[in-house]
Length: 258
Image (tube, rainbow, N blue to C red; front, side, top):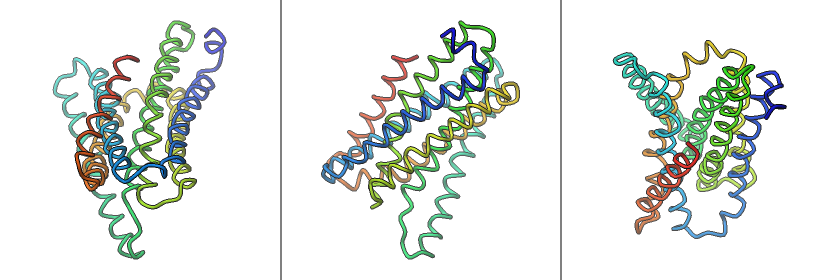
């Protein structure tokens, strides 16, 4: 930890977010064995991905945003509400645009693309959070330890999130290698955002609650419009059990790592 504390803050943030990216890629790699599962199992896994995303929207995004705005009363409510609705609206507009593209191209799938957009958006404020933590800890080894633990917690949570993206792409008929490429690529956003957050810690700190709320709205919108309906098509409670299990898993990780 002393070696980490001795690095420039941007370098420490870079190493930390490279770890979180590696965890995303590890989760995305699970898509290579997904073909061994039946339709009901894949449906349940899509439901679990939706549960993970909904839980992450609260525990990893909205809750930290609320904590960062503690004591600001109406201002905090405004930021969270407007940011959340803006994220959901962005997904609705993206969905409409992708529908037009699908019609123009003769039926190209869109569900995986929406999941990719939402998870990439989700990773940006997480990267900011890691970068801001390291930037704020400059010269204080004890705070560097807290920043490193934050990066470790986000990294562990990123494993199932990488699976969310690659599985959604795979379910839409994409090949395993290409689905993995999209899944791991969604995690690269954290690396760039982490370095930016460490360098511009003052400005990013004020923007972070907006970014967190926006990403939460986007993830909930995608879960409800794409992943849960796809899971429900598999029938026999796949969506219900999948969403419940996914939410419980993410909640457990957050409690254990909190």
